[in-house]
View 1: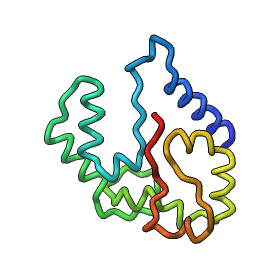
View 2 (view 1 turned 180 degrees about the vertical axis):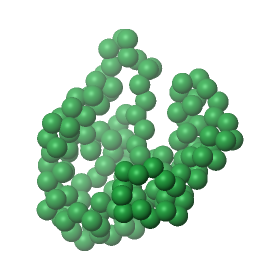
View 3 (view 1 turned 30 degrees about the vertical axis):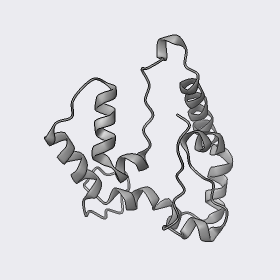
Length: 136
């Protein structure tokens, strides 16, 4: 976990202050942004790479992020309610596990606009968003 978070943090810091060869060639997309507004996010990504999203791609993205599958296998590719999947960690992980991830990943989380959980109650309260505007 520590290695993954450290590498992610370094990548994000490079994206914030990119070398000349990387300027304008890197776009960060948060999973939560994609699942909360798949069409808008997809169009932004396509625009970034100078392409136009078509109706079939948009329909596919919408279907894959708003389906009804409730597979117990989190990495299986299927249509599902992706907003529920994106916040499942808040109900599955213990407060101690969440704090451990936050301790390792706090730099990446700050750059990506994720707030830290203050209490176990905050973690379980899915009506409270933990997203802020990312720095990227």
